[in-house]
Image 1: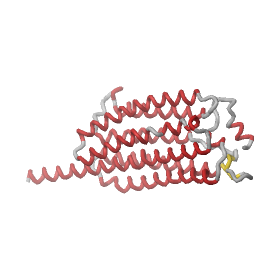
Image 2 (image 1 turned 90 degrees about the vertical axis):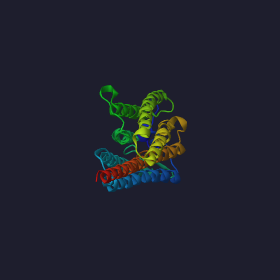
Image 3 (image 1 turned 120 degrees about the horizontal axis):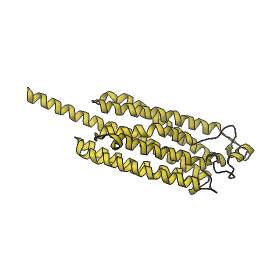
Image 4 (image 1 turned 135 degrees about the horizontal axis):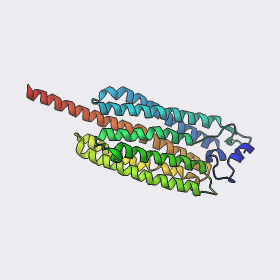
Length: 286
């Protein structure tokens, strides 16, 4: 390991480089991480195209706004994950032993993911509030305020914590991670409240069923993010890095792309149902 990288990975201080920079990787491990990042940004690009093509297939201001939110999420995630892949490719090289190590010019950082999530998570949550049609409320009871503020606090606490991936002094990583999980639980409670409201507000059975899938995505795929966050404590190893990046990729694809597609399909189902009701009412009036 280069002296500059070793210094950045030193455990003398609390704030150190992400563990990705401090380990060696076999060619297989290095390629697996690179492939995971490619799958991630390619899926976001495909999602952007999907939302752009289906935006006019839904009627109603809220439903079309949901598609616009989805396009913004896909675009920001694509830019982030593409740059993550490029940083992975540029910041490591093969050494004389046939292993990939950090070259020391710059550092690979997962911190950029958190900055991207600070854009994506509020929009993903606002999409849900729009589609479920729940009464937003006012003041501190405003659902948009509650769900976005709890989501952002979760993200920013994780962002601070990821600067402390020090397996020998794990206190700050654990503290920021646990407090962030508390805000995640608060956010999840509001999400479940929105989903339960959708059971009575949505007109179609297919829409209600798909909303249950959305709840499952939150409960399962948003909840696995902390596994990646705490990976330096679970397995501070090259294998741990591979697992961490694959968890990030799977969670990002499902919680952004698949989640957005399901919400769009709900919007399409509800739009079709509303249109049929209007047609039936016109026939009766005639």
